[in-house]
Length: 333
Image 1 (tube, rainbow, N blue to C red):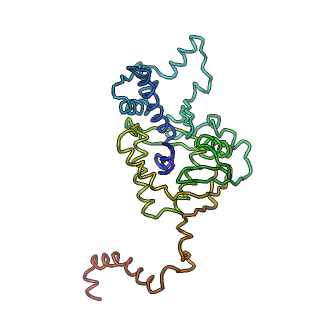
Image 2 (image 1 turned 135 degrees about the horizontal axis):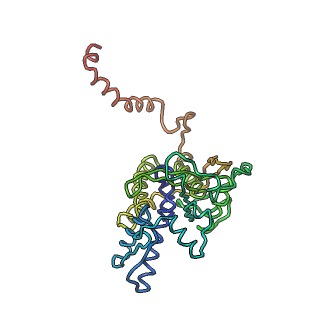
Image 3 (image 1 turned 60 degrees about the vertical axis):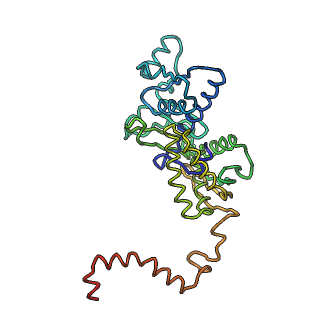
């Protein structure tokens, strides 16, 4: 699934890289597979009634294993987080103070953090609440340059070293996280219809998505990029809502996979505390290198007369609209 989130440069609200939604879909699929292998008649999840995960799990589980009964004991018993902590402590099972104050979900595609600050819209997250990037600004590192390589839209190497997918994600998270890259707070509409807010740290996702997007600009046509935006938005909705097992998910994945056929090359990155910049992009499929013209310098693909005629045609719809808006003035001239 991550290869398609990368292919689509998918972010919720233009910000959040769907760290949790991506995990839940896969978790539900694996749970359903294990349940069928065991001959189980029911599965359970630990989500409460207050968030998106209960919906994601149940939607995905019903699609993956329609015959299984789905149980949600935490949701179906109205117990708050504070009450859960008190219950555990009363039975000699202490909960770490940080765990009591914040809800943290850490995965390969990012970490989300929820706490008192995220219950409203105006308060920033306490510096001590960040998990992956907590030390990044206390002892800032000097700028560093790195190179991320892609093959058919998939990140495959970091600084020339080919790595397996999980190892690469972990390497990029460690390097970029040390610079505080990938921090954010997402505010958006939940599946339940209310607004919700969550802090996130996604150093690997931020680095990979920024690099991938810039490489695509070099190798894809403008129409490909625009079409991808539409497809990626729908794909992101499916992931967010737990609907990825619907047949349309495979259709969208087929398009995204096809779009990545030429997305191969290297992206040079400059990392500074809290900042990520693309310094250069190269690819054997560069549309920029394929042209005999140089933007702003040399018109190698057309003549001056052709450019003049093209400009006239491009201007024509606006010119006709202006004439139609002022017919009397046009007639007088």
